[in-house]
Length: 216
Image (cartoon, rainbow, N blue to C red):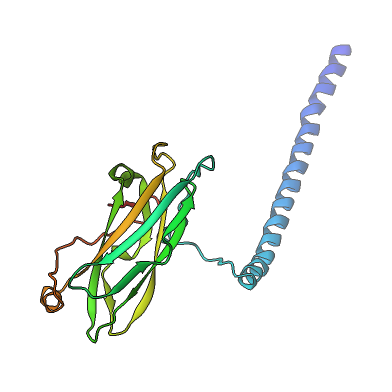
């Protein structure tokens, strides 16, 4: 008789657990539906708020994304900027920032100024170099006017950005880096009229996020 009662009690347990499982399943399904509906309704409102505060809700292209680097805040490095228009390209060309202190790994943007004071349209190509040479492999340009040729109409002036970071793995005995540019006239005939000669320079087609080009 006792064994029969025990079997009867044990036969009821799975049924009770099955009922609980079914109720939990339905409860979970209802919660998921409610959360999905809430997110669907809130999505347009989220877009409106983002646009109002100036935040893009569109997917960011890889070549426009911010480079994520490890920033070494325990030290600073001095970066100096220089630039010259080579004979044959009579442009006014100079850095707007001559020196800056940065943390290795931090993305920084500076600008150069260029102006064509002549009465002719000219196209120039900037060639970068880094000193000391050992630092060249740690200096990464994300955006640079040296990636493409620059065409200026008579009297035209513009500011040209350079966006870069110095790799945090830069040797600690390097405290100062100098980024220099030489601007050349790509037209040999035109350069000759202005007392110079065009020099064959490869265009620095710097890559984008995750594959930035090193200076030099």
